[in-house]
Amino acid sequence: MAPAKRPAASAADLAKKRRLIKEFVAFTGKPGHCFTFGESLFGALGHGEDVTERRTALQVDVAGQQVLAIASGDMHSVAITDNGSVYTWGVNDEGALGRPTDGDAWLNSSNGEREDSCVPGKARMPEGVFTVQVVAGGGFTFALTDTGAVYGWGLFKDEVLDSDAKQFCGGVKLQRLPTLIFEPTDMRDRVIKLAAGEATHR
Image (cartoon, rainbow, N blue to C red; front, top):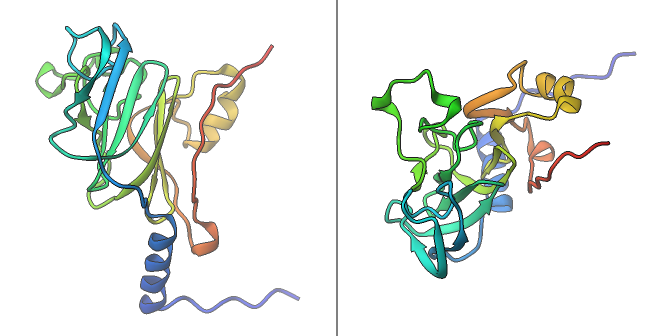
């Protein structure tokens, strides 16, 4: 005997679920500023291409906004501002910045639309999306929203993961702009935290 179908949720029920999801996963930290120091020849410090080394911490200007959270990949950095926007800077050869800049991923785009990859710029997340967490790795970035949805961009470059990556991202191995990877259908499906690592094999 086939299981009985659940009745479709009303608009009021869906609105209530969205509020509950947002309350559950919303970032509760205090906004502040992002500081960087160390060495980077690729703009990962966020102070322009001429600043390749900092022995003392220097504040990064993230579009004049305060920062809620940061993450760093191999050669790029990511920040969430207090309005839920995602800003990125550093190497963009593999699409990890989620915006048009210099770099191999954007060679075929016109120079007029390319931004400076060595200073923070806004990743092209869809309008109205509020990000609460970001993770980054070797050439990729993922973002978690206040509704428990996940967006991702960058390059799936490990050949061992090719089949999974292609299935996961609809056959796209290089994703230059943020794309929806997962969207919850109800409260039980929501994602509440992301983690990222490097794939290794022998």
